[in-house]
Image (cartoon, rainbow, N blue to C red):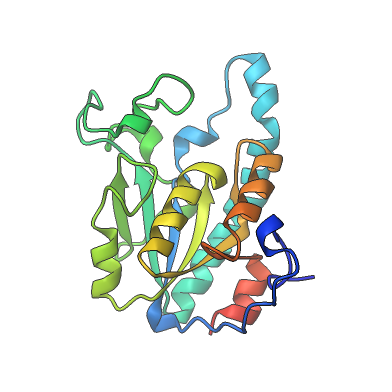
Length: 223
């Protein structure tokens, strides 16, 4: 068991194991996606509060502590730390992409300066960390992130954040299409349900990214 054999989909069942991988710190960025205050607010409605309780438990007990450790390790090893957050520039949100305007759960209005749109306090960006604001699901599509990564000589991107099956997935696919080598840290991500989280990792693994645990990233992959 391990990153070379876990999260195999139908397409990769029985495929050869990927080659060993070492991520050179000078060529690697850590991208933390959408871990914002709005998603950690408990619901006032009792039914919704019960539905989202496992997600909040995973976020507070696993994802945020693990991501804080990953950020600290990245900084200590000379890996660039980058944050992406959903934040519209216009107060009424008319600059948002269609996917963020459609009625339903994904229709969030998060003006850039409002407290609920900020990164959670435990992961507060350092003064020299890059923070990109996006009105799209993919952190690449609606920002200059690709250009920034290219300018810094980045070839590998380690991804953490939420939601695994939405903005993380969209970002990972965009990065892969731009020929970045992508690693998704399984225990630094979450979806609305753990079932969705696991299924999306299976879908992404080996074609758009390699899925690994925090322990594997720190001990096996990151130089």
